[in-house]
Length: 367
Image (cartoon, one colour):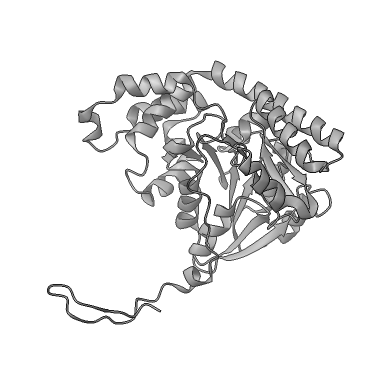
């Protein structure tokens, strides 16, 4: 309860009950990611770039950062021009966002009314349901196929109805690593012409599958990208939301004008210029992913094929024990047993990092 007595100058009296939040907020489950204690450990828990951003990003920020620049509101003209050229689209076909989270929120705020029918996958990125619930949408979850965690394409197509307002899909999916091909995305788009379809391509660089070139052909298609994963800039909170120019006009109308800070916009420009760094890191992460899978095979641990920079493996009733013991040894992994019973997710960073994880896991597994 929120009733209390207080005595402050000019505020004497008995406080009344706190305001009642919206029903949608009262129904929501809280989302509380770890917010401290990760620095200095081997971070294989949040699918980040495990070696950091390109040195060119830091150098560019040093060159451009001044007291005067920090004193004015962000200006995005240069960043928008460079990013449009890099992605091969028009400046009018995307908007900068404060990470993928704002992209999801912006899409929901622009197109979903209270009670609107929204389809999400389960398990998947928690923010799809978070923002849909916050908007008061009627959320329907389509589960990945239980034994294999294969993408439930036919189940989604069957679930689509004329009243469906949004379908939110990560490709590849987190935490399963499952991915679908562009042709399967097209089937969803064509089956739901009255719905906005978000394809979240946060892990695109590791899968190589994108539908970004299709935004002009499908007016209901929205694609998001982030600088938090392969680019190693999770602390900057920068992303992009793409769609047709007509759709982006509506998105910008619903978007705060300065949601992306100046440093993030600067960093994004420098990050896309150093594609050699990205290519090398992706190659290393894919080698590390293969090493993880080989290690799981050797230890007799079941895992699920992944198109992303992480692998979900089956630890049965030892998932919490493995997470906590590895943390004590300086290796962070993510327990996902609350969504996929018995499962733990590990990020594929470098081969050296993967080998360190496997060495520590083997000590645990065989005891």
